[in-house]
Image (tube, rainbow, N blue to C red; front, side, top):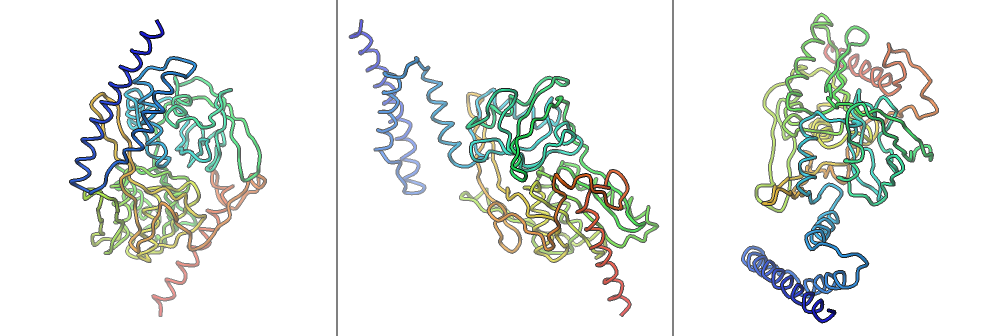
Length: 411
C-alpha cells in the first residue's frame, strides 16, 4: 500500500510540475517578447518543493485546488492591502456590496498591522450611530479574532441579515483603549448629501460618499443655498470629512464645478490604459466666492482627489486634519471560473504631481477635532452641529475670507 501511495504522489507531483512548467513557459515567452523579463526558474522549483512537502507531510489532506487558491491569495495579498484574489463566492459578495443595499454596519475598511482598520464610518449608518470612528482597529467580531484575517472574510463576518445583532471590539489608538460596540445590522443605503445655511449667507454641504449622481446633487444643493440666502451667499463649506470616496467621475465632476481651467487629476501605472488625465471645463458655480474644503483622517480616495485638485489650483482652502492617503486604482478582472483578480493598476496624482496615496492631503489650516473627552463640550451652532468644533472654526474662517474678499472688491 505505501508503494502504491508513493507512486500516486509521484504521479501527482509529476503532473503538477508539468502543469506549472507549461504555464510558466507560456508566461516566460510572453514576458520575453514584451519586457525581456524572465520568471526565475529556481523560484518555480522552490514552489514545487514546498507543494510536495505539504502534500506528503501536512497533518491533514488538503485538496489541490484549495492549495493553489492559498498560493494565489498569498501572492496577491502581499502586494498591498487593496489587491486581492476573489473566489467566485467572494466576487459575488463584492457585487452585492456595489449594489448599495445589503445588511451591514456601514464602514469603509482596509487592513493594517494584521487587523481590520476603519477608514471611515458612513453617515447615518449603524456604525456611525454606534460611535465607530475613523482609525479604529477592529480586533474582534463576536468572539472571533480578526488578527491576520483576509479582508473579504472579515467583511463576510460583519455582513448579515438586516435586524440581526453583532458585537464589535475595537482598539482606539487615540485614547489607547479597547471598546465594545453592540450594533444591529441594517440595509446600507447612503443618503449621500445634506446641506444647510449658517448665519443667513454661509453655505454648507456635507457629502458622505461619491455616488454616480453626486455632481448633479451638489450642483442642485448649491443653487438651493443661493436661493435660501436671497442670492447673498458669501461662501461655501464643502465637508468631506469621513468621506471614504467612491466614483471617480463624480470626483472629477465636482471639482470641475468650481474651476474655470486647469488639470484636475492624473493617473500613472505601468500599462498604457492605466494613464489618464482630467481637465476642467470653463465654469465656476460659485463665481469665485470663497470655498472651504473640510477633510480629516477618514477622507480618502475621491475626497482626496477633490481636495488636492482645488488646493493645487488655488481655488479652495483646505481645513481640518491630514487625509487618509488612499488614492489608487483597483481593476477587477473576472476570470474564467467565476473568480476574479482585484489588482492595483495605477495611482492618482494631484495637478502638481503629489502622490496622494503616499502623502495624503495636508490642510492649509489645521483644525483640531473634539477628542473623546471633549464630546460633551458644545459650540454655538444649531443641532446636530452643536458638538462640531471643527465646523464652528471653519465658519469663522470663511467669514474672515468673505470679509477680506468684500474689502478687496471695495478697493
